[in-house]
Length: 388
Ligand SMILES: NC(=O)c1ccc[n+]([C@@H]2O[C@H](COP(=O)([O-])OP(=O)(O)OC[C@H]3O[C@@H](n4cnc5c(N)ncnc54)[C@H](OP(=O)(O)O)[C@@H]3O)[C@@H](O)[C@H]2O)c1
Image (tube, rainbow, N blue to C red):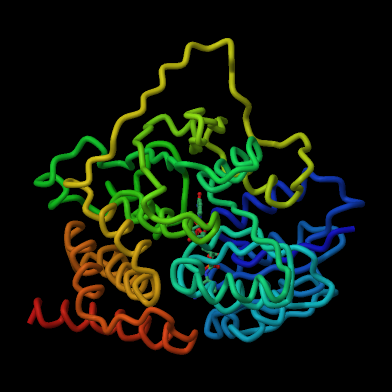
């Protein structure tokens, strides 16, 4: 029996994970713990559907928990409130696998706790590696934790790397190009929140949907790939593939390129991270070989999508660069979603934070957290200054 803790169970990845777990053999897999933040109706419904009920439920938002009817939780579950409880769930002795599916920097402490406790970590929360890559890697070495990628691109790379024992020559991340793939820079200036959230191939939470539209998501993935696969930024490339069927590719020294393909559905990479090295039948749709398929691959346009250049720069710089750009991005995306800044203000805010911060090559975790707070505050200060 493998006990699983799903952190961020109410989100897009979290609900897809529960779907996958419902289809795996019940005598081998158990949802032992769940967490949610504001959407407690959904969390309680998910908990009520589980047999047996989860041992441990965490609601990280104190206000939402206080306003919620406690009778909605399964009677047999222990319910705890607050971010410390998230860390406790991630590190609980009974847990074998932690699915890290909280969005943004809010997932850092719990993901780190799972790594420190030596768990298998199915990592959706790429921000943890972007913010604190060196700390995660160092703690992983000490604890022996397994970091299995959930991001479809990184899962693809992980699978392709199995084809050869020598290091890859190049990792080619594919990108759908998002909803503004064909838009001009002038059109993007007036992009609405609704348009930015309307991703052509993936159903995702709002933050990552906006990141896909700016291509900051690909920037974060470039940084994530460098940490996960121990490759320098120069060994990573990005190609636009609007159909989202080829999830990424790896080029080896002999020029052979291995790719991983499947219809766009996160349940496949989630399941692979859970069951690796085994493969079992998956609820995600399969490639329909009776249909004609026209797929395209084209170079990424780094001028219209300046986030890409930023991603390569941050990946090469390491140190404090990731924490600062990630925090500035989260703050700027929040302002955009609230209708307070333009879509095209997001990436310049990240660049400004990167350039104005005091770079350190070997920061401590405390310093990274300090800089995260600093960058968020700076973005809000610039916005207030610009709008007053
Ligand atoms: N969606 C995808 O297809 C996809 C693909 C690859 C990677 N990822 C990565 O997976 C992660 C989750 O993405 P998502 O699309 O699933 O996001 P999402 O749908 O917005 O869900 C986010 C989850 O995090 C919880 N949460 C939000 N703020 C929190 C806080 N301050 N403390 C604790 N929990 C908090 C939410 O709880 P409530 O809903 O209860 O508030 C929800 O369970 C992100 O790092 C993203 O980059 C997503």
